[in-house]
Length: 121
Image 1: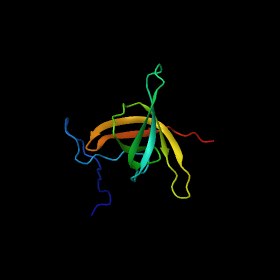
Image 2: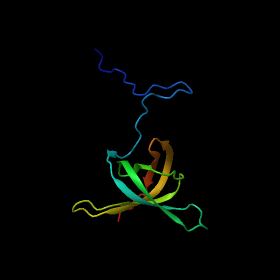
Image 3: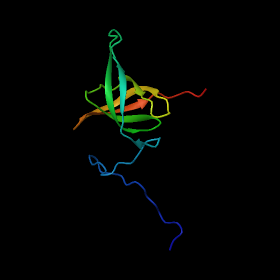
Image 4: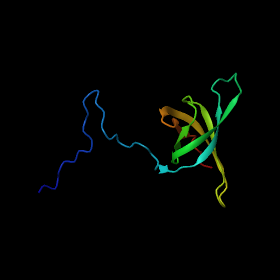
């Protein structure tokens, strides 16, 4: 047995063919959870100051973003605030970010939100 066995983790795929199992490229661990949160979406048009409030069904969350189901489509790049309610002795909190994807789902629209980065104090 050789001590220098070649290990190849990724094989190149032919053009036009996708892997059956795409590689995970996330930088933060994702946690599955089910809860309802409230979101406030800011209109992308600076001349229109209206905001839209919407309830979201959470699917998963990580340090960098979350996945949720929305009853209505939300345009990518929309600024969004997500308000997490208090739970037991824990206080509620808010996170801010923008929508990075919106795809049709059997229960509405599946959206991905990337949180704004926090700067160290």
